[in-house]
Image (cartoon, rainbow, N blue to C red):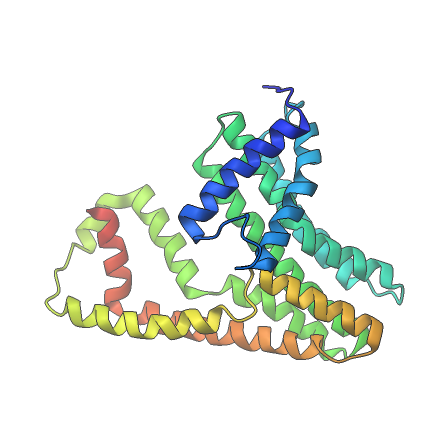
Length: 283
């Protein structure tokens, strides 16, 4: 389905939705510069860059899921450009530009889905998948950049980023149990019936207390735009002033993923955690 919206109409539709969504879900007013100048300027950038792209996309038969897949492809391109073994800095800047502007594409798929009434669970999943690929591509790309410019040891460390993403036990548990519930729920109910525990309140208090520290730790240099943009800024400063930021940031990212990997093992090995998750779905 094609639409012939003007740039002004696209801007108004996109702005109205994002303003409402940010107020309801993030308590952030897109027009409030003083409270959060970074978010204010970044959203203005998203609007300015995504509207011309949407102007073209609404006139085609391109589907939102196609845009989401292209968004994921940005992560692969970022990895390649940051990892090119070349002294020409232009490739590094292109990789950084891709990492900085990826959310422009992410903004487009949601707009198309709402406009063309093509919202779906698969589209929601692809949106998260795109963010996942971009995070791995950017962080691994940093490792390959360091391997080319610092020390070959970073070549091996670069592979630890996708490795730790792949072996997170919590993610594996979710995938396995979801498949079990979809494909063979009767067998699951028979072999692992619902169990009611008496110490539920105590367990909840422990989870709530430790979860606060886990969220604080995992939020440091996470996959969100503010963290990515900070790393990009430090990257540019290092390229132009011969400073040493990126190798320390990358080493912290590897360390962080290792700690999260250990935490996931601890969480999933607790018998009650996965049972509670599955029981919520059964209700």
